[in-house]
Structures are given as structure tokens and as C-alpha cells.
Image 1 (cartoon, rainbow, N blue to C red):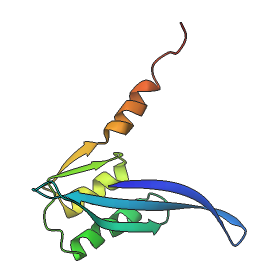
Image 2: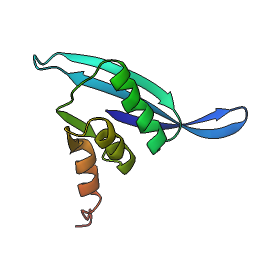
Image 3: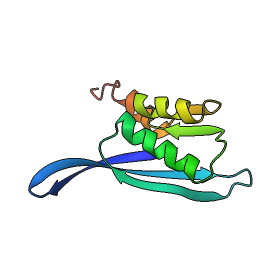
Image 4: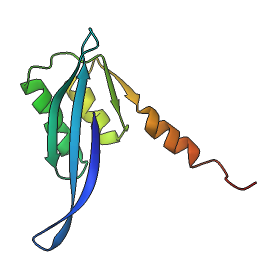
Length: 105
């Protein structure tokens, strides 16, 4: 589950819009796009609507969520899928680690 924030100009006003994709992998290793959303900023209300949509589409159990570890997404996951594990995306872990490394010789 990953959301990307875009800045768009609508009616002459700059706005932030989030595009979120949820991709699932079943027990046989088959990938499937579960949902795609375009909405407001990455708020708790936004992530709750994503979780609600997944439940409405028939998702009953998720073993592991891999996200960018925003507090809002974490709270939404715990609310809808409390038995699921939550893992921070390796790309985000790497970015957060590299920013603390000095590039000077």
C-alpha cells in the first residue's frame, strides 16, 4: 500500500492530491491490484476510506501491510485489520538512514 502526493492546479488553486495503490500478493505468489484511490492529502480520514474500501471489496485478512509508516495509515490499519503485521517499506528505511550519512571525505 503506497500513496504518492501530487500538487495539481485546479480552478487556479494549487492543491495536494494523493494517489494510493493497494497491491496484494496471495498465498500462491500471485499479485493483484486491490484498489486505486485518488483523494485528498494523506490524512487519517483518507486512509480510513481506503481501509473501508478494502473491506467492502471482500478483503477479510491481511498478513502484512508494507507502507511508508505514516501514523495515519498505521491507525487506519489497526482499526480495520488489527491482527495484521505492519512493516515499513525498505525504500523508506533506506532513505531515512542515508540522510544521516555524511558525504564529505
